[in-house]
Image 1 (cartoon, rainbow, N blue to C red):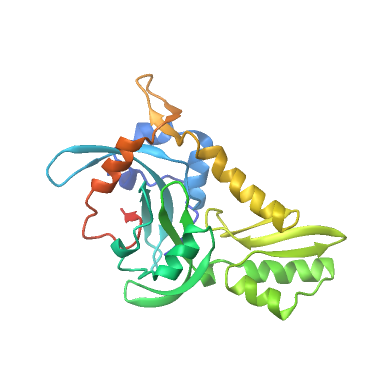
Image 2: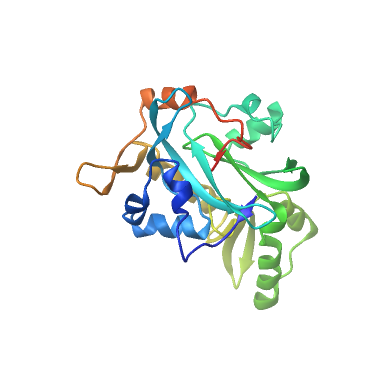
Length: 258
C-alpha cells in the first residue's frame, strides 16, 4: 500500500462503513480533512462499526487514505489496542526483536508480502493505537530529498549516514553551520520529516508530539450539537472493546482496510 492524494474529495462511501455519513464527513474539522486527503494519519476519531452479530460497536481509531498497486483507493483504519499484538498480524510476521524495536519507537525495514507481491516496507508503531503503520520503501523519497539537500547546500553524506537513512534511522546533518535532523516518519504525508536541530531535538519533538495527544487520549467525537469536538475518547473500557472487536477476514495488517 502507498499513499495517495485525494484532495478533491473524501472517500465518502468508505467512511460510511464506519458510521461517518457524508454530512458528518463534511463537518469534520478542516485540518482532519486535509490530513485524510493528503494520505496522512488522522487524529483519533470515535466511530461506530456494525459487528457480525448486528451490534453497533463504538471505538476510537485513526484513519489513513492509501492506494494499492493498481491505484485503487482504500481506507486503512488503525483501532486502539492495549499493546502491540505481533501474533495477531500474519502479514507483517513480526519477530520478538522487531516488535521490541517498534515498541521503542524505532522505524524498521522489512520485506512484506501484500496482495501476492513481496516488497520492502518501512514499519512504524503508532504509540496511541499500538497499530503498525507501513509503507513501501520506494514510496518514501527520503534519499532523493537528501540528494537535493546535498546539491543545494554543498554537503556530502558519508556511507554510514546513507545506510542509516536506508534502514529508516534518523540522521543529523550540518547545513550552513546549523544542525538539521532528517528521518522516516510514516505519519507525515511524504513519509519523512526534516527538523531544525540535533538528534536530541528530534527525539524531543517525537516525544512531545506523542505527549501532546497521549495524556488524555484526546480525539474527535460527534456530539449532540451535531459537530465534531475534541473530547477524551479512550479509557480502559474503550480499549477493552477495541481488543474484543473481531477483525473481518479482509484484514491485511494491523489496520483494517475498507
